[in-house]
Image (cartoon, rainbow, N blue to C red; front, side):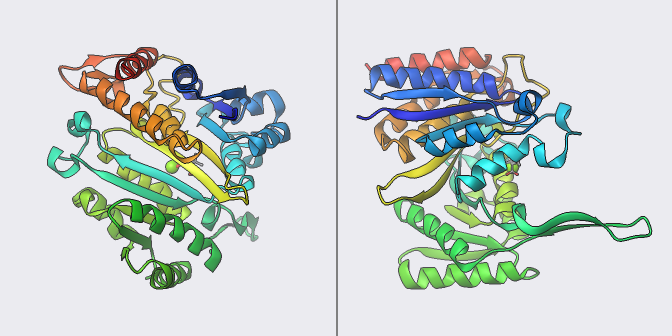
Length: 369
Ligand code: IPM
Ligand code: MG
């Protein structure tokens, strides 16, 4: 197997702590599974601003372009609240997504049996939950122009963001959702606000047309975004694949995360289009942020990042069995009662970031026989 290039961008806050555990897991697969990787490390976010005056450097962007996968921790923190907008930490994340053309963001919300009681919802509503949120990631209001604050005289200012989508942007993300649904239970819910937004009307029409043309076997349902929020907390198991725009996807995935027990559990994959050799650019990151309140304390939950590596094994490295093994090891660790603070429950054993990593590695070794 050829050597895979991974660029690690640990970022700010708890990013370096959780990525440290991911590196140990990568090391395990390198040793036990003929998984040959070269790792490089670069700065992005606030830590990069402190050194270079920008959120991400051109050199790092070039390395990201060439990598088989980028592993991102998290970026941001209150100490950078007042840096200029163009170089705020989040700009690094948005540039990576945009320049690498990672238009498809996959955010699975999976409830591990052992964590069903950690959810803010009743066990019976979330037990066995398995939703895939497919979020459009390079368009919509995040990137639409004009985007500005302008002076309109008399001490008044006007802020403008632009929500914009084209048919091809909508079709390519809907295609990802339909393809995933075919491998799951064959049900897509397309989410927009066509009752107030023209982009919502276009979204509705283009997704419907694509289904009629190419995916008549997949069940398609349309739902308004506000209703989807409500349905996610009322009866989340009605969903299989949810496909939605950049902003609604941001919000719905945060809602979905609490169904699973904690934001500390949710991985994500951001994928580009396949090139002629079948290779797609990819970035893997936990859905959670930098958690400044617990950064540096060694208590952050590394599972979202570790599960993001499992997604990389599945979607970039085509090692589905390794991904299954890693997910099983996480499951077994939770089943033994080990918990970081964010998913702690009475009667369980509270552990820190490194101990959680230790336990998952031990399970890997045990499952390996
Ligand atoms: C996410 C985050 C980002 C987003 C922020 C940090 C810019 O919330 O990945 O969900 O809004 O996309
Ligand atoms: Mg978000």
